[in-house]
Image 1 (cartoon, rainbow, N blue to C red):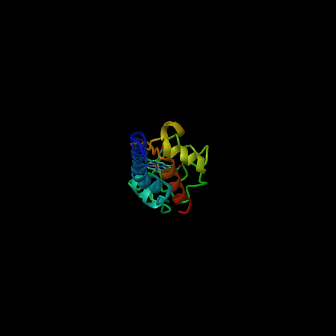
Image 2 (image 1 turned 90 degrees about the horizontal axis):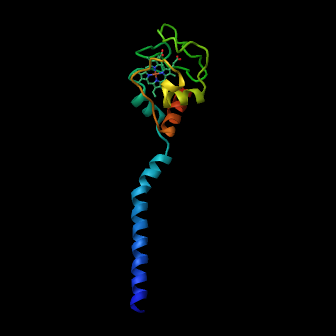
Length: 133
Ligand code: HEC
């Protein structure tokens, strides 16, 4: 083996090592993202300060029991803003938009100071949890 060959081999090993380090660093994040996010835990984190999923249990926000498929503004006894005028129902797409960006999806709503969840996987997990509640 001449000097050049030896240098090539060392370079190759360095690249392999770099790739391995990268895989070890990124691996856990990729795995955490792919794994099921616990929708109930995510709901508890982001929504439960203001919402319950128990029928009739209005707090700072209206109860969200059976919210998927429910008409907007329909929780009895809750003082909604004019934005929740019952002109639409909460299907999954509408909920996803609302949780991502409340003001853009239902302008003038008073769900403040909640400003939205950017991560689509977390939103989906919350909606799946709400579907079953
Ligand atoms: C700071 C308190 C607060 C937080 C946090 C909050 N909300 Fe709300 N939410 C409200 C209020 C207040 C309203 C009523 C808004 C209105 O009348 O315009 C509302 C309304 C809603 C509605 C409409 C209900 C209906 O009957 O039409 C949905 C759906 C909803 N919230 C889902 C969520 C979800 C899901 C989360 C968590 C990702 C969340 N909210 C976080 C306070 C909050």
